[in-house]
Each structure stands twice: as C-alpha cells, then as structure tokens.
Length: 56
Image (cartoon, rainbow, N blue to C red; front, side, top):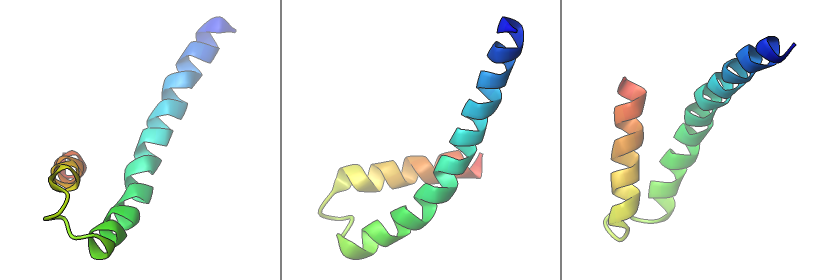
C-alpha cells in the first residue's frame, strides 16, 4: 500500500502542477492589464519565467 501511495502522490502533484500554469495564465494576463508591468519589474520577471516554463 505504501508503494501505491508513493506512486500515486507524484501523479497528483504532476496534475496539480499542470493545472496551476493553466489557471495562472488567465490570471497573469489580467494582472498586467490592471497594474503596469513597468511599475513592478518583479512581475515582469515572473511573467517571463512563466512563459519560459510554458514554452518548455
């Protein structure tokens, strides 16, 4: 049972990671519209990192 549980956990984690970028995409697109990215360079860097991960 432990082996099954250990194998099941990564699958759930992978599913959560796959769902996070999808949900973050629309939120990220709305965020730049509300607040200018020029004001927050950290946000711009985060967006660039997110896009790089999505491209991979």
